[in-house]
Length: 360
Ligand code: IPM
Ligand code: MG
Image 1 (cartoon, protein in one colour):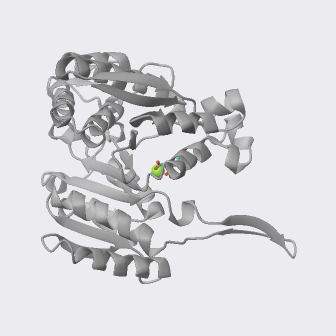
Image 2 (cartoon, rainbow, N blue to C red; image 1 turned 30 degrees about the horizontal axis):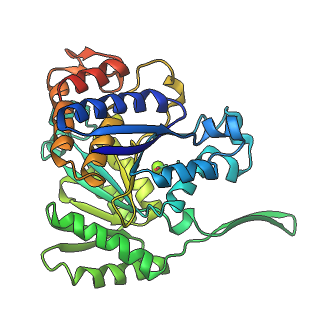
């Protein structure tokens, strides 16, 4: 079986971590009888440097023709990089927003779980972290504020900027259905997060989520306001199973949830459309300060590749083997710098990739 995978190494540490995920996929292929074929495309700053724009039509066409996309990270230092002197629609992030929209990747899955082996890195009090947690953040990814009309004008000599937050019921319904479907395979609880005490878009969100819930009587649904959710994530993260929320709330809460695990370098993500197609990327950014030093943590990208095997290719056994190899390497005490603790063995990005590949 051939897996036609488009890769976006991207910027910063992106190329280093994607190289390790490729290594792991190749090893898993040898073991489980599939053949990953990689085609690289440029996106973000890497594309700006060559083409002047963060994503070309040709690159989108290549990605669209693939079975799945594996991405590293894009973007640079927003205060020093020349990319951020460009107009907003030509900056690295615009490429990521565009590929999500063009490929209709409306469902973003961001698992945040506490690895037993890394419990020491969890910044929460031990009485909280001892309960453990395993949260799936389902973030709507192609609507809301990030895709609404925006403008900046000068009115009577005063600068004024506007962003608009719009959701129609179809956009809400399709992400809600994904959320309930995922919950059915987990602990059967959905926490829908909104700001229904203020926003119309949230009030519609709540209504539509309740309508969808009627088809999933086994799933417990609760609603939570986003500000409370931000608090509950540090107070009692064990209460959550699936967190279902709109684009900007999901952006913010997923960063918070990942930090609570103590190791943003560990967290994978999948962005899916209505087919088996998906874009898989680590939840973290491009870390320009450590780029090119071979010290980044490739595990989030490797775990994203495992999500790809599971969601896009139904290769559950191979996906499980990759995840087990990650756990094995951690239990043997190997760590990259970001998750290093006393008594462990510090390894480079490429060593970590090889150690994981060898254990598949
Ligand atoms: C993320 C990132 C992006 C987002 C940025 C880079 C546009 O923060 O994937 O969470 O906000 O979606
Ligand atoms: Mg973000």
